[in-house]
Length: 155
Picture 1 (cartoon, rainbow, N blue to C red):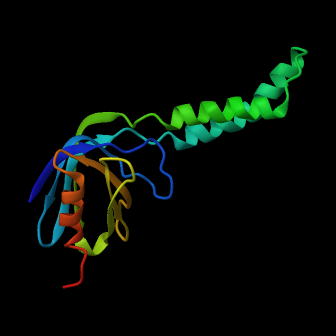
Picture 2 (spheres, rainbow, N blue to C red):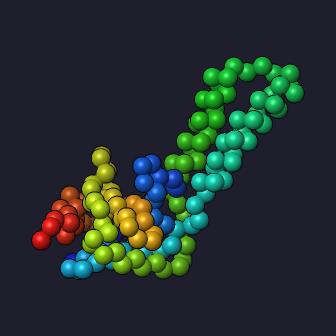
Picture 3 (cartoon, rainbow, N blue to C red):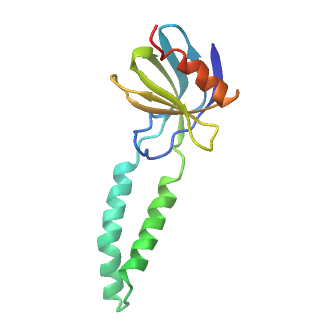
């Protein structure tokens, strides 16, 4: 079975690190492996974001104090948090380098449709790379999800 769609990983993951596969592609299902064919996502900017937050937390108050301005910490924290959220909500850029991942079913830990979304999350563990594949199929997501879940059931 073959499911065309779009790999759409967030820039930063929540509970699971997003796998760096992005752009137009497909999931190909066989008895032994789940193959994900897409494009390599850009490098993860998590470290850059963390450094930026630390610099903002230290630098912004120092700058404002040196200018003689007094700002309440709650407002400053809200502005910094808003900036972090704006940056982390961006989507990961897609390169032109093709990427093919062959994932044995024994390494697929779960398949689930994301709440209030057409996106399917495939959790991969026990191999390199590991993390969450974020995939929006062209077909009905609930149908694709149930088809993939059949391969997770013990035989």
